[in-house]
Amino acid sequence: MRLTPILAPGYNPDLHFLVAGGVLLSWKTGANKLAVERSTLASTLVVSTTGAISISNGFSGFWREGALRTVVGLTYRNKSDNYWGVGYQAGLRPFTSDSTTEYHRKWLQFNPLVLGRIAPNLFVGGSFDFNKTVASDINPRMSADQTFRRFGRRNANVGLGFALQFDSRDVTVNAWRGSYLGLSGTFYGSYLGGDNGYQIFQADYRRYHPLGRPGRILAWQLKARIGTGDVPWAELPLLGTVYDLRGYLDGRFRDRSTLFGLVEYRHTFLRSSGRLSRHGFVTWIGGGTLGRDPAHFRGFLPNAGLGYRFELQPRSNIRMDFGVGRHAHGVYFNFTEAF
Image 1 (tube, rainbow, N blue to C red):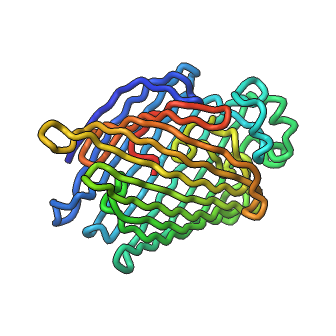
Image 2: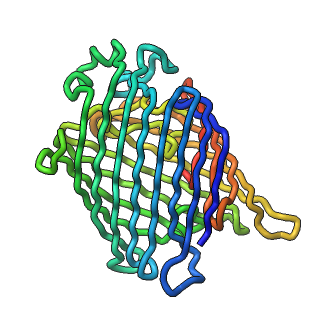
Image 3: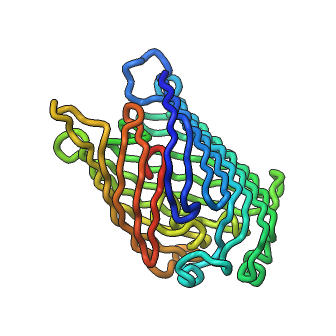
């Protein structure tokens, strides 16, 4: 078992200057103690100069020699947020947040996923999701927005879902080789105690290809999220988060459906002895689009960036990324890779 604390300053376009503190706990389960894959628990507390507080907890467990997997997220945010409206055109003006887009949001999410292996590299399972938004200090832009007026300041949603995954990655949190294809659907409804009835479907393909020596990886991802039904404004799929098009302000681009693709080169430096060091960098390029459904995708959001990597524990990195987009840029600090 390994326990590593961390305390570091940071900056991102959403929270501005911040201090992030957290711990990374990892261990191996089962009889095969030589396995590379480790169960992990990452907990982070972020406090920013804007007065924002963000608490994130992510658990990934591997049981029965990897035949059973559990992934659990628990997140709470209390911060100033931004809402431009729905769609590509709504996010084009203004380029940065101001009094016309800012509001205050309290958000809570709990989303466990359990997967069981049914064939080599093939997993099937079920998920649960609870999310709640309470918005206040509403700006005039939001007050006049039809989608916001329809769903209001408060929303609590409960959903049950399925997941099908093909996963041949050597390590899930920092793959050097292999492929991942995930298909999922989550169904929200009042019959589960939520306020809204809607569905979110997701397709996520990733590939990791080694380039010569260990520590040089070409990775790419193509991901789509499609919403149907009465998706509330606070849970519409976003583009421009810490896990996709890094550089855009969180909340600027949202719609019922999104699609993005990224290609990323990952490089770990060598020590003088020829062994891999704990330091590395990444660079990426990609872009995305959005619309009410895949037949009505509109606009293109370009994205590129450069990042620093430090191996906090074996095959588990912390990252600092600088991303740029259309009239946008940002710096990010986070545990684990973006994908």
